[in-house]
Length: 345
Image (cartoon, rainbow, N blue to C red; front, side, top):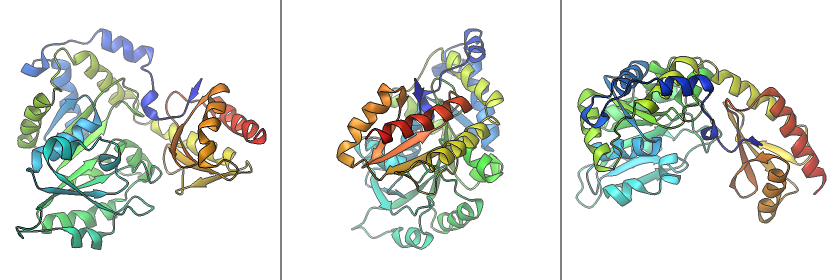
């Protein structure tokens, strides 16, 4: 079975499993797990931040960041195609009473700086107070596009002038760094806090890290406990994260290359159109001329029967994501599979 639904489906390698087996552990709620402490220090260093906090998921990391900064009734600005708005179960509102103020994401994943400036609210007692701005890099629903350093710097100036906390959903920030040939530290330096995932292209079985100042992470640690995210002998999981950060960063370029190969092959099939300027990094979105939205469930089942797992994004659009479980040979099989099933429609 070839699984292109997401880079979250990656499995730990034998080498990663071995370092997990050998991991030195302690009780992380007491901050006595040496492997977790090592992962947090390594992550903070890679992000150029003072401290890090190991958390079960990127969704929890984004939630904790918002809860750490905003009070009930405050608002956080974010794109209308952002992961925090679309795919995190409304957590900031349900659990924090925080208003998600969405602005249109442009096709390149950015938000118009003028719209950001116009949306920021102040001291009027009739309005929620704008406390935070969240960006996403790479941007999933905009095709895995990487936000440029120039854009981030411009947004930083707005945030500073209005005293907004700037948070980055950097689930795939290492993909962005490879795409832009830019250091991760530079890409995240304008942000007060950043969450990145270990369990996507880096191949760890679980976990993310939230980074920021020592004071911010101390507050985030308390929130993690409140949300039920305090883990005990978590070094077994943290060891996988350390292995991923030490061994799987540069290989993300292979995922980008295979996404480009996949796009090249699919683009030669009648009835398939690449959209959202993909692939930018390790994902591509494709739309079909001959398969209507109503027929997508049947089409997906046909792909599954042929040994291919995919995700329907919306309408008759499919997202395909390359990862360390996908080989060059798999890419060839995927192209042949799409061609055959479309010809049978």
